Amino acid sequence: MKGIKLIIAIVFSLWSSSTFESCIAATRGNYHWRKLKAASATNFNVLDYGAKGDGHADDTKAFQGAWAAACKTEGSTMVVPSGYVFLVKIISFSGPNCVPNIVFQLDGKIIAPTSPSAWGSGTLQWLEFTKLSKIAIKGKGVIDGQGSVWWSGNGKLPGTKPTALRFYGSNGVTVTGITIQNSQQTHLKFDSCTNVQVFDIKTSSPGDSPNTDGIHLQNSQEVVIYSSTLACGDDCISIQTGCSNVLVHNINCGPGHGIGIGSLGRENTKACVRNVTVRDITIQNTLTGVRIKTWQGGSGSVQNVLFSNIQVTDVKTPIMIDQYYCDKSKCRNQTSAVAVSGIHYVNVKGTYTWEPVYFACSDSLPCSGITMDTIELKASQESKNSNVPFCWAAYGEIKTKTVPPVDNCLERGNPRSTGIISKIDSC
Ligand SMILES: *[C@@H]1O[C@H](CO)[C@@H](O)[C@H](O)[C@H]1NC(C)=O
Ligand SMILES: *[C@@H]1O[C@H](CO)[C@@H](O)[C@H](O)[C@H]1NC(C)=O
Image (tube, rainbow, N blue to C red; front, side):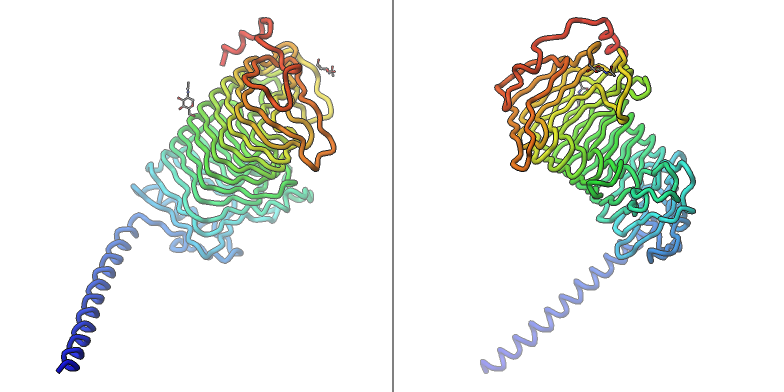
């Protein structure tokens, strides 16, 4: 009797559990089906537009087709699926007539052509998103510029190297999750954009690849860049003229040239940068840590900058302001300059390989309002040179004792007015 009861119990439980599971499965299937159906109306997969994704066939037309459809559809997603390598030539995802809120879901890999015939002379960028409102690139995918053929400068490719991914004239831009690697020149550029968010991204290029900035900002406002790892051959982040209200935090930078504002004022141009915060940064094996560089002969100003919690390891010069920036062997001395004021360094610690602090400011327009609080920089063990801080026409305040001391270097208070200072107001 006990045995029969047990068998019945087992049979019943098998029956009921399988019925239950098939019910769940049916419900799930139905749910999936509905979800797929709902999604297909707004998902535009490049494979459905003829992309091969084999790394050889030219998938540019398929990308153009998928974009044209996504551009017209409210709440659309352009899908670049994982498991494929898409060869895409110069392309503009152009948006003046697109709906807002398009997602570019990048999970596969996009590679650039390397043959000279694929590039017109003077091409400024490879992948461009322009004149869009609320555009997001998301996913775990990779953009690979295959830049090594450009870096070596073998003569057949155009002299002007393109930026890999550029956003222009857009409001509400998000870039997250992706990796941009081996860019021909700058990896990711924002020009004339507002409300930009970049997070959880990676840029990756060798330390000796020329001009491969990680992220380049120009004429852009309300920008936040965080939680990203930037390795490249030039500035990890470069902030150029026309930028304000920029926040950069939790970045790992290196190799590269560090995080910088400038260069500004080239060829007697006017440059304006204000309200930049760079905090919670680790930088290793770079040329500089945090740098401001301006050309002689420029005008305008850099105002209100905070560099805080900067940890440097084996950085050539961790703290630098250079108002004599020059990429030739010699530049003419000029009286006008981009004014530099209100630059705050808090908690900058670690090791340098050349010199801890370098402030080379303009005679006619000295740097003012530099503050230094909790600075501890030591010569790295490998370093054969350990130079003392250098200051020229740099004025400000030492909030706490610094290591090494800058007491005999930074001039206290304000520079005497030179009259040129009124130009600060013109920004
Ligand atoms: C400075 O920029 C931050 C964003 O990084 C912003 O929240 C703040 O309001 C700005 N301050 C001024 C005075 O514009
Ligand atoms: C330019 O000015 C700096 C600072 O006064 C000086 O050290 C340098 O020798 C000058 N260079 C030339 C080319 O006159």
